[in-house]
Image 1 (cartoon, rainbow, N blue to C red):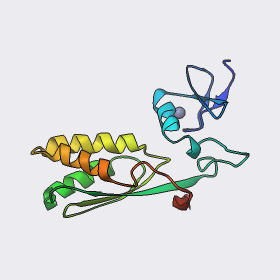
Image 2: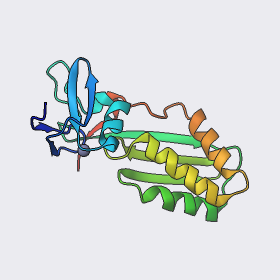
Image 3: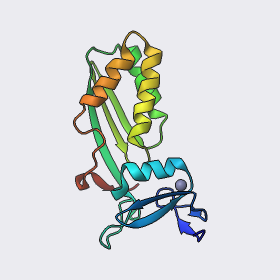
Length: 157
Ligand SMILES: [Zn+2]
């Protein structure tokens, strides 16, 4: 223990085994709880499997499109606030709000689903009048939420 390993999420060299996780019998070291949590949520994006380099190692984007249907329509002002809040996160490619629909395209290698959830909860709380609950419900009902599939892999840049 204490040997130098590469954090599979951010690529930093790490010496400590303070933050570690085991995936398919292999132990990985991380620079932080944040990197470890991202790995644990979607390990197949970061860990090499069966001798194949991971999407992260190949420098790919893992694009995921989420479409949320809300119980009520957002006004254009509310839509702009939601869009603005989401666009400050890294890895968000597009946000489109139309009526009661929010479509988000993001790179899962740069933004964790939990970060989107937290940001939506924050903006929902600021919008008031039941919006925190509507956004939460919209995320929960979103069929593709949190999934990542090979069809979403795209060359980066
Ligand atoms: Zn890290």
